[in-house]
Length: 364
Image 1 (cartoon, rainbow, N blue to C red):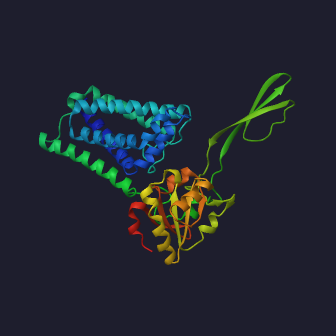
Image 2: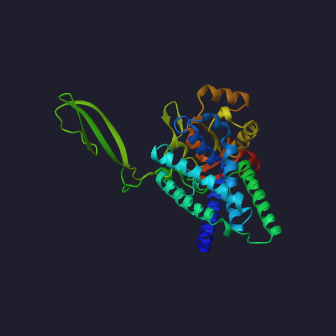
Image 3: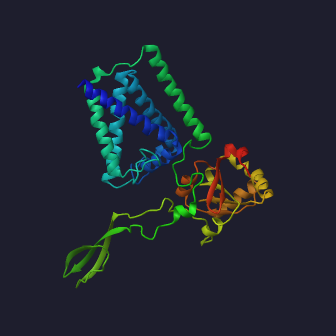
């Protein structure tokens, strides 16, 4: 039992630290995932949506700290009970998501590793078993170091977590796991290879045959049935190949201008997923940005999900005259974790990405 507890302790502690640090590297991304869970379509607790970022930072900080506490043996009773409570909550969440097919990606490892809902649930189930083993053998969880070094390490883990969380919120994630990272080719990320696996969709056809409902299941061929067609349901068996970038576009008045702008050599893109929610400090810097990039021969455009009236009102308020184009809000939140954020593109390749706080670091 002693050795089993020791192995479980190492595995659980390391996994909690890795999982927590990946999410702490991108707390905004995890907060978007929490908003999805809190939405009326999933858990139906929309009152928590405004607090998603705060909850995100607290949860991932707790995840890292508990992992550290478990490894160094700091306050074992508090640590084990907290781990048990956290993993029960996560297991319920991933089971609910998988069983009801609500959230396709739990966000357990951020954008670094995508897990299906059932994979996430399996992972949490294994962790639950290991934490129960630790709970049953909690007498074997003893401090690795003397009291003073143990306390110092515990305190340092607190300080580091809150510093990292603050740093990436003011700037950008330290490590960018998304398809829009610096050096990425957006056009290439949107392309689908000719030999890519195609989606497999199961169709359930319903017919009224002499007053009785008859169902026929196949993969898309319209059945030859002597009866009245009632309806059809589809189920995705295999999603096939999905390109890393599938929802990015640059549109205006129903016209798709994505290829046009991704072919330009010197392009600055101001990204604001919502002009209604844009940070005023960042908005105030856009006038100077507009003038400086144009003086260097760059084209500047904006991307937002906001409507035409809001675009005009915003430009008037901040004395701007560059055009705003339409893009999906979720896609823009993925492009850059800032509102506003700034990208430099050259023929679709991301050359620079900056949070508005770092505009002085833009190199033209």
